[in-house]
Image 1: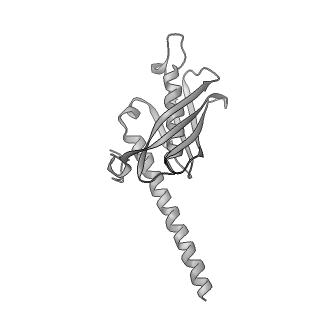
Image 2 (image 1 turned 60 degrees about the horizontal axis):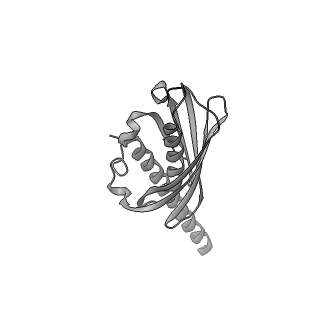
Image 3 (image 1 turned 180 degrees about the vertical axis):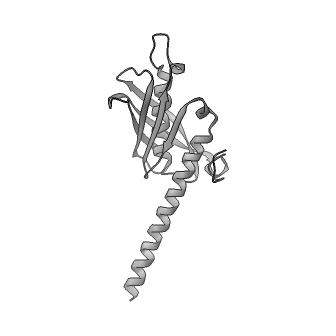
Amino acid sequence: MCGTVTQHSAGGDADAASAGAKLHFRALERLYAVAPVNQLFESTLQITEEGRSRLQFEVTQNAYHAAGAAHGTIYFKMLDDAAFYAANTLVTDRFLLTTSFNLHFTKPVREGRVIAEGYWVSGKRRVFVAESRLIDEEGDEIGRGTGTFMRSHIALSGLPGYSDGQAR
């Protein structure tokens, strides 16, 4: 019987950890939703598991450069956000900061939905590396990036949206 209790206890710890991770993921999604810069874009963040994020953006003509396609700033915004949130799933106490980001443009995008997928690659203490890619409505990759992120002194719990349980 002791073995049964021990197994149940270990399972309970795993369930509690899983529940805690899900709370952290929802809090990161709220943090994204209330950030002032994200009010400028039609976009949503979804985190389904540790080390992964998925953003959906609607690219409009407001993001175009003079030649009629999305400006590189929108590519960077989407790629950085996806990689950042994938990395920040591993950090429950501090906000991460982007310290460097390399990006590659592979195809111009005009109006439409773009999916940004972020994947944590390495690091679990102070510095994190994550990659991201952009997929257009046709399923083509239109951009790819790799970012380096560092723990800041900014507590997540003190940021609007993270701990209040609802978007403002």
